[in-house]
Image (cartoon, rainbow, N blue to C red; front, top):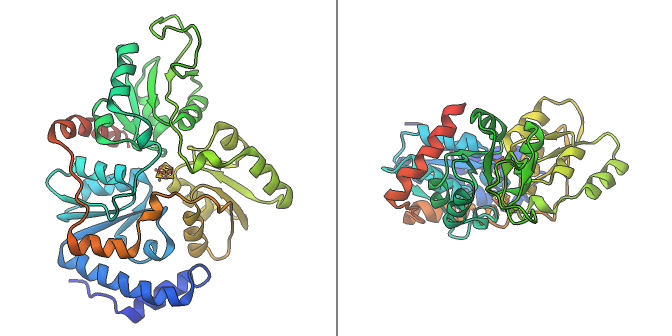
Length: 349
Ligand code: 13P
Ligand code: SF4
C-alpha cells in the first residue's frame, strides 16, 4: 500500500505550487487537512474526483483524478473504489451515482447546486417532447437525473458538437443552456429557435426553418462576461490570448481566441507559447493554471466565482469522509432511464 505523505512533505509540495496563490499560514493548516483526508480515503477505499474549478489548496492536494465534466464521468465509470467523493457540484455526483448504482457517492456540501441544472424540470422536457414529437433530446450534463431520464443523449461542453452531429437528425432539442446551444448551433451551421420566443409559431409546423430547439437556461457565472470586458482587456494588453468557456454568450466566444471545456482551455494554455492569457470562466481555475504554469501570466476578471463550486472545501471534504455525508441517491426507476443517455454519450468518445 502506498505510504501516506507526511504533513511536512504535503506542506512543501503545496508551497512549491501555491506560494504566490495561497498565504503561507493557510497552507500549513490546509496541508494538515489534506493529509488526514488522504489517510481516511485509503482506509475507506474511496476515490476523490476533483473538478477543475476546485480551490487551489484542494485541487493540488487530494484529488486522485482532476478534469472537466466529461473526463470525470469517464473516471467515475472506470473506478474500482467502493466510495466516490465528488469534489464538484451535485449534478456531477449524481452522474457518478447513475453510472455506479452499487457504490456510495458522497458530495461534501448540500449547497453545491448549479443555475443551469436548476433552470429546467423533467416536466418542462416532457412538454417540449409533446410539442416536437420524435425530435431527439440532447441534454447538457449540467442537469439533474430526472431531466436526463427524459433525454435521448447527454453531452458536455467537451463533446456537444460531436454529440449533435452523431444523431444525424435534421432537428434536435438541445437543453437547457441557451448560450451553449447557440455556440453549438453556430459550429454545426444549424438554425436555433427558443420555444415561446418566436411569435406566431406553433412549433409543430414541420415546414419551419428550425434545426435546433433550445431552452433559456444560463450559467450564472459565464453569463456575466461581455464583449466590453474583452475589448477593455485587449486595449490594455494587445498581446493577450483570450479563452472563453462555451457557456459564455456567442458574442463573447466569437470575440475570444479559443473556446472549449475547462480541460480544453487548460491544454490550450499548456501548448501555447504566449505569455499572457485572459480566462473567461470561474476564477479559481485561473489560480490553478497560474500555479501549474508559473511562466505564464493569467489575467482574471475575478469578481466571478461560482457560488456552488465554492461550497466544496477541504474542511467539508474531511467531514464527508468522516461522517459518510452527503450520500447521493437516485430513485431506481429514474436511474435506469437516465443511465442510457449517459452511456450513449460515453460511447461517442
Ligand atoms: P466543463 O465540463 O467544461 O468542466 O464545465 C463544467 C461547468 O460547470 C462549467 O461551468
Ligand atoms: Fe453551474 Fe455555472 Fe457553476 Fe458551472 S460555473 S457549476 S455551470 S453555475
